[in-house]
Length: 120
Image 1 (cartoon, rainbow, N blue to C red):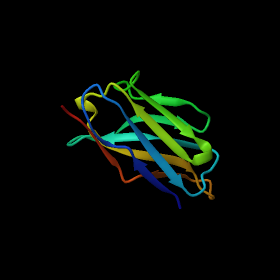
Image 2: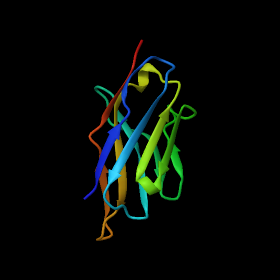
Image 3: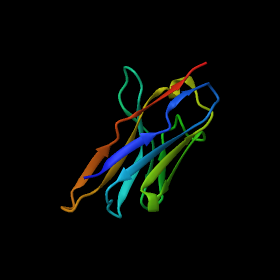
Image 4: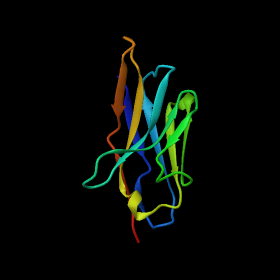
């Protein structure tokens, strides 16, 4: 059983920056995908950025060039550096972990979410 704990959300003015952190407790299979999804009010949850155990990254078109995802395998931690924030980035950001369990079944785990509000 793993737990994902996010931190770093808050209120920021347009053009500002925030860094989100997600710490994963428990052991993780060597093959995984970690990342961040977000959900704005009245909208479906959508991908923001992911990173695989091999280091491959994937970004939503809306955040490319502004957001950077990174990870620290030794600390089981993933980060999302968000620059040049826009009001449309306002959402609850959820940390995601996809990996294989001991039964070799793919599992999805989520954090509780952290609010990011971009407003003047």
